[in-house]
Image 1 (cartoon, rainbow, N blue to C red):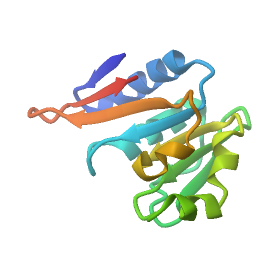
Image 2: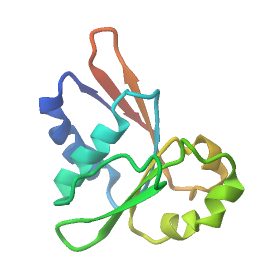
Image 3: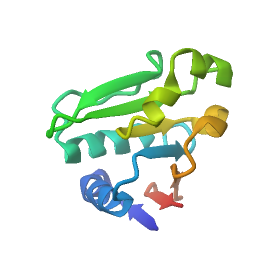
Length: 137
């Protein structure tokens, strides 16, 4: 599946369609260059799920937890500053990934081997005109 996002006014609609497409799957690995819109997309997902808190990048905390409108937790990870799988294991990331709760993971490359088999891989890219593309495998 592929979506093009021409401007920020479209991102909530794409997030809603993405969630519909994802169905019951709960772990999402977000790939893409810095500044391509991964965190912005997770913010839109949060709005679609009824998260009232300000969704922000967990760069230094590694994981942020938000509560959706139906009371379910949503986890947002950023492994940019994690240097090894062991470091990720030390804070218990696998417990989150196998919790059945929604997990959105930025910079998943270093922990790829820890991700569940049914992880949804999401690839973000920027086109020359400044629009973004989200391609999901």
